[in-house]
Length: 95
Length: 95
DNA sequence: AATTTAATTAGATATTCGCCTAATTATTTA
DNA sequence: TAAATAATTAGGCGAATATCTAATTAAATT
Image (tube, rainbow over all chains, first blue to last red; front, side, top):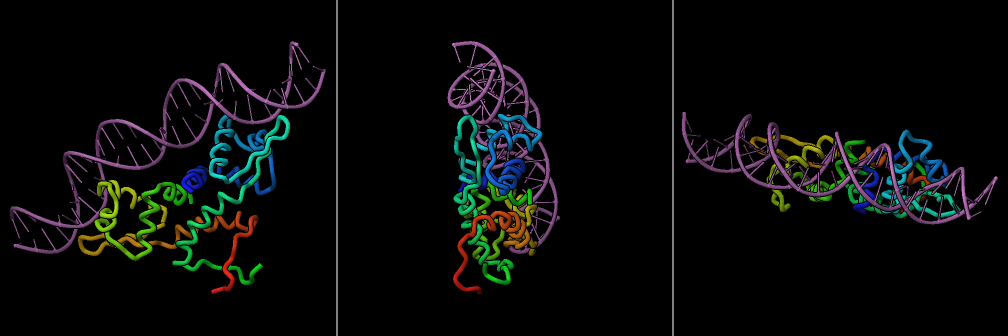
């Protein structure tokens, strides 16, 4: 949980997560989205992985990164403790 | 939003928020909960206030701090973008 | 008015963070 | 097997962060 809060406290890492909503991407494709060197992106990916916000799967010489539910769940759980005290708007229908 | 992510990326500040679930507390009462000096707590309170996660109301020589919905909403909004991709467990009945 | 109490602001310091360049590892292709 | 490609690891540096002590502000009490 500690790791997840740390991971999302950075604009670049949050943008990486946003980008991965589109689906899995390899490190090079991710790096291309940002005006930053590959080693820097690599480091961000490492922190996101530590936080279990993303998964990494090696496919040949590429590494495919994708969103991982676990990290988001840990944030969700923390948040729920407060949500109960505030009553956030709920969708009209349950999906 | 930036400020909210920054604010919750610290164990002490998250504990302050937890403590405030019980209800409003003044700075001294909050500081008593932690093995840390009052100026340090004061600084944490300032960051939480900047993030609109807490409100501060001066009552005489005391300042009463309480949870503020706004900051939590900004985190909630960000989170919702991902929640849709994962389907988090929902309560059985709508309250 | 002087003292006490609650809290913040100011300034210093050690640690962590984000970024870079250079070097390394691992895989594919010529 | 040598060269090229994908990605990481290593090392260094300036900026940001968390903490402390000392000083300041503001309100209440004596």
